[in-house]
Length: 344
Image (cartoon, rainbow, N blue to C red):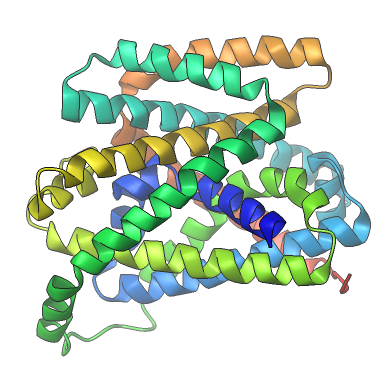
């Protein structure tokens, strides 16, 4: 159970970054479609759990240890694999930059700290954590993720009276089940998350050496993602009238519960940003480097470049780039569905 818990926390930490914890992703992919978005949330979380289960099964059955080997399992077409590898690497790097921008957006919005100061700070933290490899990722997620999960669930429980009132008032609102937009949105959300997730699953595969572990981890991840997603979805409903132009909308919403809540949730968001930035950056570095010397050079390069990219803006990067990579990620999911994986 200890291994299952650690792997689950790393997976959750990879999928819940600044975009998720701040509410930007949930607002974009789910809340914008009204009550149908909540059904989309359920679909997305179930699909994510299925992807986790399927990938771990393939990794263990075929003894895969690198992302290149994984792509070769999905497709024998070298050109398709090369394109996929480039897309994945670009997305991982951009995700790292987006997390750094989210870190800076928090300190700019809440504490008025100049972007370049916070950008340098997180770049230094990432630099030292990257040198600890996957053990660094596991250690950080094991410490920070339980705090994030518990606090989001706590705020979600505090929001239950509003949630009940809201849905009782909108109970008669019709949902167009055949409307492809909210369904497509939930699939896109899953697909772009899978781009970030699969390289980390490959690194975690040695811990998942039995079918029982894989099954329990997949189910646990699905349940946690669904609970957290529903909590944030309902919180965004509460602030629907005033959060449109905010970089970090959930921070503003939790202020309604008391002055201490934005402070605690700020810590939660910082934890989510840091864990997700480490996961994305590490995934990029593992796929891009072959020697220790090359790894160190790339660590320095991405940490320094993140300082200059951060001023572009967090919400601008999320809203522009994530839907695009969601479409590209569909290719990987479709190929994944064609692979026959047998029980371990």
